[in-house]
Image 1 (cartoon, rainbow, N blue to C red):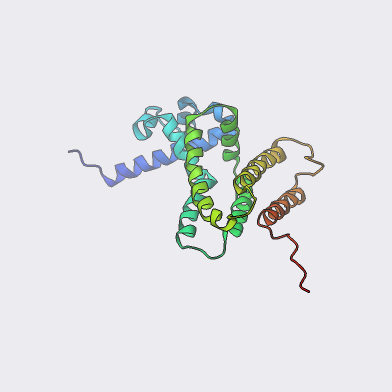
Image 2 (cartoon, rainbow, N blue to C red):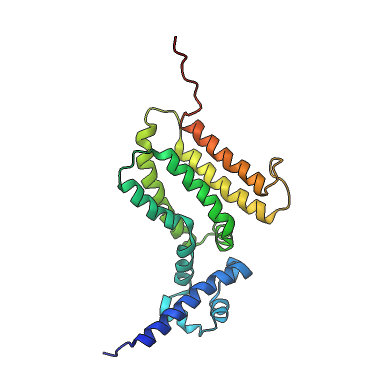
Length: 216
């Protein structure tokens, strides 16, 4: 059996890392339609055959990159730890932090902005698989939240869906469209208004704004 020397192993890891990083550069510069073997290997400065050798296919390489950048992948790991400790703080604070952090992460991540545009523009098995992984977060969160919301006429799944999708759209709108949205300038101040609206909607959903009966 042929031995693999440390230097050879390091060379392989460096090449794999260059290929993964090149996916991000191609995604930023050319969009998802530019994610071809030729473009990625040229950007990385390596032989295109190494994509198949190290990753099996260009789809596997792209999936590796997106998983490394996707907010919900890391958030799911955090949720496993959070809900595994049987927290007493409740689900509202967790959901609020999750959504607001999603907004901040998406604002800063040009590559994931392109990936989400890809996801909603055409059918892609890569993005479908990533989306199925994201649903693991939903299963963890709603199993916990359902106990709190029992007996309340509130569809927290639908509310969370609208807020998540709205954050994606408004961030993309703020970056790609030079116009207001519902008369809100989507600059720093405008995005703070959106953040405050997310907090308000969740307070309504959890009944925090309900008037308490006056004691006589």
